[in-house]
Image 1: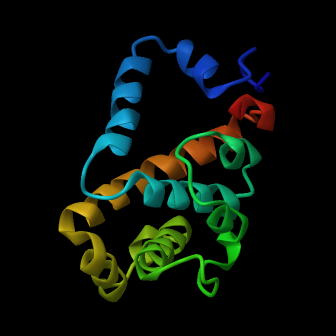
Image 2 (image 1 turned 180 degrees about the vertical axis):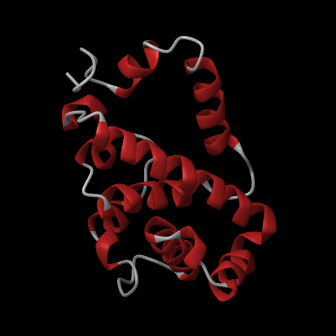
Length: 149
């Protein structure tokens, strides 16, 4: 139960907004089906945002499979061998975005573009905005971690 409704999952909360849910579902699905950036890379960023915000419900939410070594060592992405150059560039951008999107430097943006191109950079930036918002909403709604199952 959240502080404002009986809902215990994100889908239950969104179901209270029937005009909103179809558009949200289409937007969310489009992130995972676009060709500009691999879904597993998006998932690493989604998980890192959840981790940085200490949001258990988003951390535990099943989405896209990522290698277990990456998931287990995500907080050490900058030095762990399970992460290559593309993951490091995207996770670096993700961490700055999570703290302050205006603080992203041209060098950080260029590092991501070098691996995934301009369309990948745009897709990643849009996805991070959505992931950030959903993580903050899960915290605001006080959804329990089992709501992710």
